[in-house]
Image (cartoon, rainbow, N blue to C red; front, side):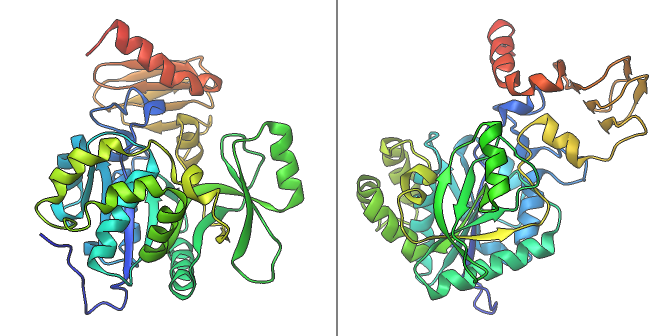
Length: 364
C-alpha cells in the first residue's frame, strides 16, 4: 500500500494536496454536510469542482502524485468522482482540525515516499479561468522551492477593494517572486481601498508551494507539539497501520490554520503575484459573477426556468421542476430536492446561519 512514483515522468518530484474537507455551508441548500459543494457541478460545466481541480493539476503533476485531503465521511464520494486515484492517495481526517494538521499529515506521507518532493497545497473548490497561466505559475514556484528553502504562496492581483479576502503585503523587488512583508486579515472597505492604492497588496488565495522537507522543518520550528505528535507515526506512513495511528492521534492535534500556525510567523515567506482569472467561489454571488447572463442579467443554472420582468438574479434549480420568477431583482433563488431558498443577494453572508436555523426547526 504505497504511493506510486512515476519514474518515467520528468515531474515525478511534483506533488499536490487538494483540500476537500469543507462543508460549503454558504451554498445551502445545494451544499450540505453529506454532499458538500466541492462534489457538485456548481457552474454547470459538466464537471464537479473537485474534478475540475484534479484535471487542472494533472496537466503538470502525475495523477498518482495528487493526494486528496478530506473528511473520512467523503471517502466514497472522492473515489467515485476521481477514478484515477486509489485509497493510498486519500488523507482522511477522522475529525475537522483546520488546515495545519492535514498539511502536516500530507507532508509526512509525501516525504516518506519521496524526500525530494515539492508540494502544492490548493483548495478543491476554486475557479481558475486561465489554466495555462496557472500551471506556469505553479511550475515557477516549484522550481523556486526546489532551489531554496522558502515557503511560497500565490497572490492574486486585486481588481477591486474586496473586504471578503485576506491580503498579502509584499516588498518591492526586481525579481518575479517577492518577499512577503505581512499577512493581513479581511479589512474594512476603507482599508481595502488603501491597500489597492498602495500597489503593495495581493489577495490571499490560500494556495501554497514548498518542498516537503522544508515544510516539515517549519512545523518542527513553529508548531513543535504537533510535529512531535505526528512524528510518533514515522514508522507507519503509507502502510496498513497508518489509518489506525491517525484515528488515535489526529484528534489530539491543535485546531489551527497553516496561516496562523506557520505562514504568519516564518521569515522566509515569498509570494508570486499572479493574474489568471481566480475566484474562490465562496458565495452564491461569486458563482453569479462567473456564469453567463441572459438579457436581463440573470444567471441561470438548470433547465425549465422562466424569468419575467426580473433582473440580476442568481437562479439554480435541479431542472426537474418549472421555475418561474416574476418581478424579482437582485435575488438568489435556489431549488433543491428538499428545499427552496429565496434570499436577497445582499443577505448571502447570512445563508450559513439561515441553514442552521432551518435544519434545527425542520431536520431532514
